[in-house]
Length: 160
Ligand code: SF4
Ligand code: SF4
Image (tube, rainbow, N blue to C red; front, side, top):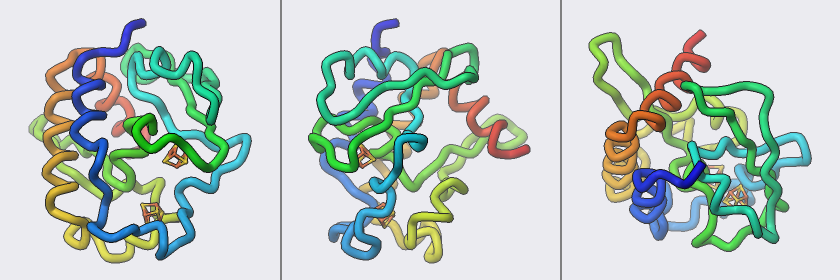
């Protein structure tokens, strides 16, 4: 599958932005990058095509699908070429929540609670430029049918 334009555009929007204006990794020694061989970030639909020759991570197929797209995990070595980090890393610790009326809202990712000290302060503590770019990135993804279905089922998976 080729990488959808929406995924490329969303990645670009968040290329140079981070949750805080300062380096939040100094608060936690970069906790969200300290995974292990079993831990990975979920790639967005078609994003795996960007990593066929990646030298700092492996893409591992997961044993589940989201919105009809087979999920793929990105398992890195704990450092990366920043301009090549996956979209999930660029959006972290934000998550897109679907409301009953079909509208959506940015939330802190429940999966971030165990690792990210920013979750203690809530979404209001995050840099507004970062939040605006994330909102715009999600809006672009929602315009893409495959990505929208993926995001919806991801939210459902974490709402059970
Ligand atoms: S865990 Fe949270 S505070 Fe630490 S580097 Fe990641 S986003 Fe920043
Ligand atoms: S790809 Fe980069 S930003 Fe993402 S978890 Fe690995 S080191 Fe951290």
